[in-house]
Length: 204
Image 1 (cartoon, one colour):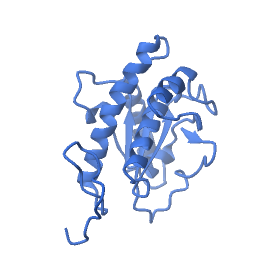
Image 2 (cartoon, helix red, strand yellow):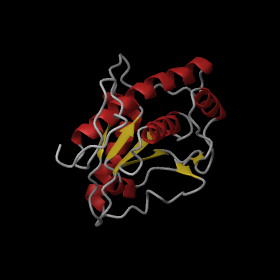
Image 3 (cartoon, helix red, strand yellow):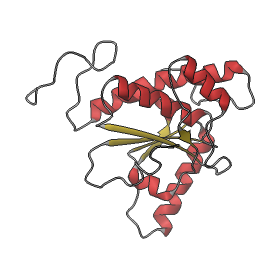
Image 4 (cartoon, rainbow, N blue to C red):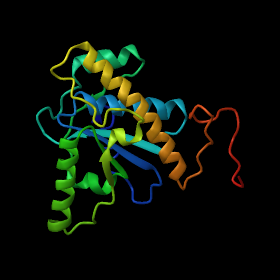
C-alpha cells in the first residue's frame, strides 16, 4: 500500500540499494496487508532499522485501488499505536517480483495468486526475473493459525485477531531478516528486540 507522501519510493528502488524490501499482500489491500505494513513499519522505526529494511503492501485484486484502509482497520490499529491513515491501496504487479526480497501473503488464496503471477512473469517477460521469496506471512509466527483471516465481514474481534497475529509474525520476520542479513545490523536482546545503547563493532 502506497503512502500519500511518497507513492513511488519503493517502486523506484535502485539496484545498488542494500535494503531488504518486504511486501505484505492480501486481496484488496485495505484490511490485513495495510495492518501488517503499519505494524512492521512501526517495529522498524522502533528499532532504528528503516535505513536497512523497507516495507510496503499491495493487493492481488484492484477493487480498492487508491483507497485508504478500511476505517475499522485504521481504528483498531490506532488503539495499539499504529497509524495506517496515510496508506493507499494498490495492486501487485510483475515489477514487485523484482523490487522486493520478501512477498508475504496473508492467506493461501493470495499465495496462489502470487505464485501464478511469478510463473506468468517467468514464461512471458523479457525483463529481469523476480527473485522475491513468496510465502505465507504467518510462516514467521508460532501460531495455530496458518493464515491471517479476512476481517472484512466480521466484527471488532476480527480486526483485533488480525493485529494479534500480525504483531507476532512481524517480530518473527524481523528476527529472520536480521539473522540472514549481510548488512551490519544491531544485535538482538533476549526478548528479540534490537539492543539499545551500544553500537555493533565492525569486527564483531
